[in-house]
Length: 145
Image (cartoon, rainbow, N blue to C red; front, side):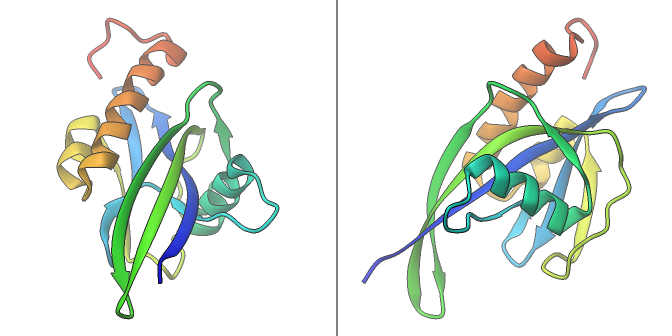
């Protein structure tokens, strides 16, 4: 029997005086962006914003025209779970995170640091696409970020 999950979340970032910083959460499966299960009758966007608030306490602004999906499988209680995760891009004006109980650590990381920390290759690819969109959105082309 196959079990299927759909999750939504976002590449959460903030811009400080020197750099673009990305929010990573650490849980039992390693470092990742905030995300969680989409509830029945909930849109992916609503689920992403809700999960970010629940997991971090941050209120974020979704950036239009960015949506990336990844798929992977993992094992839980002896069952194979097939998960699809849709990631949006979200800007946070704050950096004060209130971490949920499902995570044991968080960090605001530069792109280079995030690429080293992120557990899944597919998620690293999402970060690189998000970085390109941030360059365009924030109009910071030419700056070293």
